[in-house]
Length: 472
Image (cartoon, rainbow, N blue to C red; front, side, top):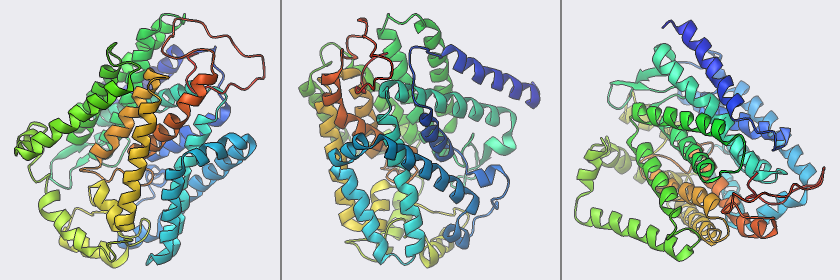
């Protein structure tokens, strides 16, 4: 098949996805397109690269200066997002107050700009990083938040995943490259490297699986069958990409998250927080047993990983950790991989062009020190507590939030998953903020998502619904 014909069929397929998944019973805000575009950009290549403006070989100065085009687009989206939240007023501020660990973390990140060697760059990056929170608040404060979340997954997945397949199979000069670690060919799709393709695929695949399970258990909507066709096809596309991305970490995270969602849907666990605690504790005990018995090397090999994690544990981590200028507070927000330190790492590891530690905890330690690592731990513990507390009220949606909260720390063991604009980080924040509202909002709604066969009384025209979990 010629690339032109494949492109035409891909475009028709994307339109077909949207047609099959349409739902006239939901009316989300047009402002939802702002986070959709934001995450489209985060999950793919920068606009400047799509336009051919980015150089093929990165430079140290490029890391400092960035792209004016990309900066302008992000600032426009952020400004529009803030204007939307300003109109919505109190709900957004209430969510921020409820999620004080997130506010505390971002406040400390802003404070760390003061001791950065590059305060101007750090401040710009902090402003951009807050965009994730702004976009999440737009989703959660929508008049129909659960419908907004479903449409977010669909709009992201229907475009990013099929186009990635198209680029890999028919435009190899764009969708494939050579791995800087192994030198072998690797698939990148709409992204810039295989690990980024892996993370966007596993994050969107979990959201798609959640929609499939919801539709499978819900026999009410008349459009259920065609939506199932669209979502199941998209899930198959995501699984294909996970296999062809050859990102063992992303594949393991999807398996873990999917297993949690399926297990928490069982009658013996559904709606019982203590059963969720037991399930998570069992997973932690199994992981500890594997580590203590030395079987982790066997597991890594089974996942297609070298025991030293492709040079991470043996070369990169021992080199980069002693370079932290201040173990307590770090180099400053997103400031470690800049200037002389970046050049030193490039000199020691030529052709890799490292700009991250390939470990989320070490990455936070380098930029924010031990205090930053402690704040990340607080954020994860608070998110887990909130998601489990919400499980009694809404097991279906809480299972998705729990999957994101538990896979984020696993993903960060080999990748910088707690970093700004990383999709794993973005959806971790979404899961924490969403979980904080589930008990309150479900209590105010007419019914729970766990009883989808019952109809939900539509509010009067113009009325604002408050439930994030109402099943439309």
